[in-house]
Length: 79
Image (cartoon, rainbow, N blue to C red; front, side, top):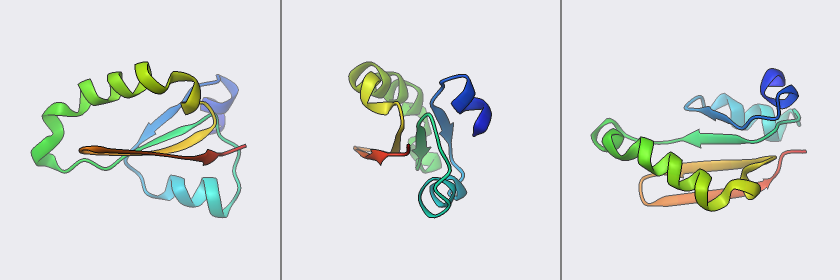
């Protein structure tokens, strides 16, 4: 996560521990997109990520985003 922050990149992950790092441990972040997609809907994931970035580009920086089929939740700033 520190590398992504230094390089000013938003991190894409399926690891639930990043929520713990960002919120409970108050780790600074350039932004995290937490992907919650079941195997049955994986085919649509690449297009969904591209659309998310195109639509919310500036809002993603420093935010914690939960991306699941049919729903996107953009949380508060992660510092």
